[in-house]
Image 1 (cartoon, rainbow, N blue to C red):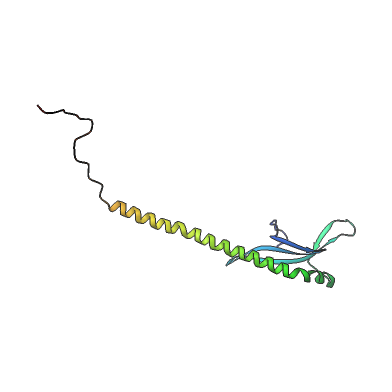
Image 2: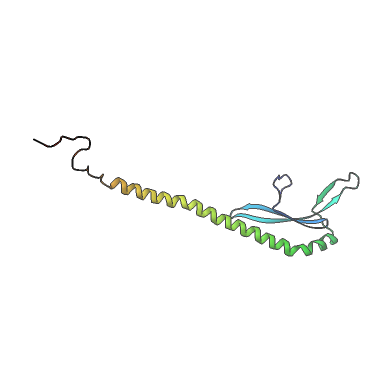
Length: 131
């Protein structure tokens, strides 16, 4: 994930000072998940919190128990992206199919002959009995 992005991660999983952040990425086949690992530390002089992508051996040992949960969440989010892509594909296909049916209806209506006028006395004209 780029440092300048303002998009929030999909998920953040923590174990003490270490974390795994799941980010949505776009590729030629649609959305997928990337994982960023890091740790949080406090600057000695300013007391501000910062993130680092550089991990020590003890940091890596803290990440190991997170891996099954990270893996499960990546699978979950990727499944959601695939479902959304299938729904969008169906929705995009539906108007084309509907337009096909509308076009067929319009063609049938254009080819149909209008109904013949009704035969018989005209309403509102009462000539009465002939004498």
